[in-house]
Length: 144
Image (spheres, rainbow, N blue to C red):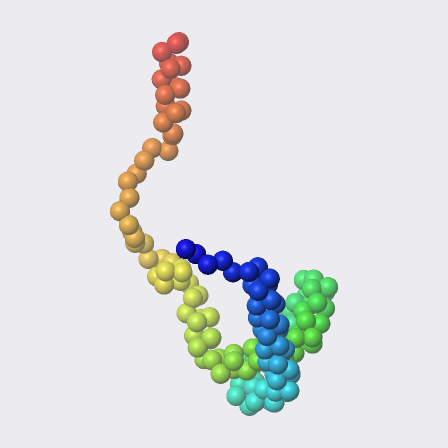
């Protein structure tokens, strides 16, 4: 026999779990906001190109659509702790990011050169004309 759970108990447990997750996320964001400026300074020492590339990206976002550039800039200001963490992690793995960016140039997602022609699977060439159309053409030719 299956024991049923009282829906009120389940609702209270879910509310407590959501509250605790919110508190955990709030604490992590508050801690990150305290560490954001030192992270940017450390990022400058590790690889200043990361911050310069991000600034260039923000500047280039103004060119086609100024409103979008303003939105990105405001989101960068509001989300500064998250942006600083992202830039710090990118600076730590900058060489790997660059090799990935350069490694995909001229290659397809399977990792082969674009000029290389291969067959990945066996296949059967089928007629391009559907069978229904063939039957209709045969019926028309019989009628005429």
